[in-house]
Length: 385
Length: 248
Image (cartoon, rainbow over all chains, first blue to last red):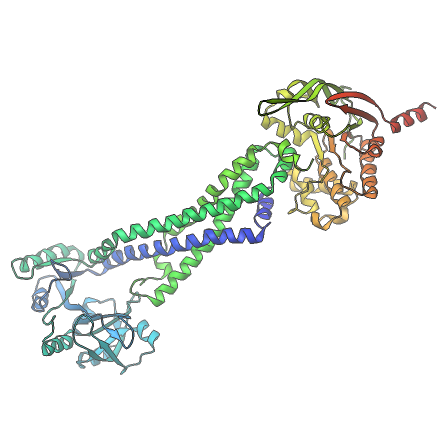
């Protein structure tokens, strides 16, 4: 404790060098924070989905296969299913922007029964139900784009050869920003039928709400058994497993991203180690003086390590702070990929990042600290005496 | 500050038949050859000699910074050749005060903090440390510079802070290596006055390496090293004069 003041003064001795070292550690930690934050988002998405007893029906071939619209009613009739809707990804361009937000064709009658945690003004819901070209959007999406009720929202088909001319009927609130627009599945289907385009009659996927968690296995089995011998057999899974599927699709990418992140951390640790070594070289005489007046090798070792740890930790706090700020910005700008705010995804991984920062400091200080501790007092003083 | 006394009259420093060699690759360089030296409490020895004669090496041996190749160095009752590295560090913190040519203050610490540094190795409380620091700075006449950093002080003031640091723990022996070597004549004179005062008023035992004959004359005893051999160890002119005056 008595040496803390001296350690702190040494950290602030060469402000430019310390700042640059702190920034180098901070940059790598900010990068890792965003990477791990993204992974935490994916994991949380999966665990959040578990809360709502929703299941997703897909073709066994995945998104490449059709789920006939007739399946929706058959799913609704299964005992234990409270509501079911088609949920078809559209992926259209909005004005000059390419797929700037999510767009799904669904059923206005039951959508808010399936996503029962979403809320909407009943009058707006009614207005949507009564308007074939109506749509509803997440309130945060409407606010970001400045859309008002009655706003015309033209969506140009990319995968589907049909353009949607939508009118905003209402906005809904959801626990996380979904960045999503819902329109009538039927409107799209009729358009595709008229245009004789690919995709008509396809529900895309079916989202269904099950009465209670304990009934999910039974309902899943019944659904898949019902369509097993059809032309379009299904694979039904919980929404959580569905979310996990996307995470698994990123499997290798996640590993690569993490590997790159760790490589950056490693290379910047070497930069920090070099800065620390330079700092110690400049203080050869000073360390010799400390040892001459009675500072033991151990005390010198811990003082140098304390200094490097402090620098690492400062970089860590800065980096994690910047990373969290960046995640918060991403949550606003890319809510589909980053639907959760930092306080929702915060966990032990943040503490682990700070521990990594301290470890970077420790690792970068080990060689200079051992050298300083082992340095001969006489040789150190020789420069001046 | 306490006055230094020899409890049983034994010498503070006892150097017996000391040899010191350095090795550069396969070459052996003898630096000290059969040195015998004795310093009693309250002695003030000036060690002179040309560059490379072994003055600093002898000082390092007496200060416990290095070990002899053979022979015995006993300081404050401790046989330094038989003491481990860790014990030597502790021993130095208790018994040795260092004064260097280039002051060697820690630039990021204030005068107060520099003087406090060796005291942080002791079990003294914060208040006791504060008392020691202020007393030491009072002795060197820098009570009004407590919170100045070394860069804000003149060379003479820096050396006085270094002396305050050396005496703060009330060590048995002060070792000074060219303490006036980097100072102008006026500042050098002030530092020598201060060292004389420490020796006479506070009864500190001092061993000082110097090239400067005027500095050496302030010591009670004078020793010359020539090529690693102690050629004489006589009372200095100042001591001779003092003795004559005393006997008269």
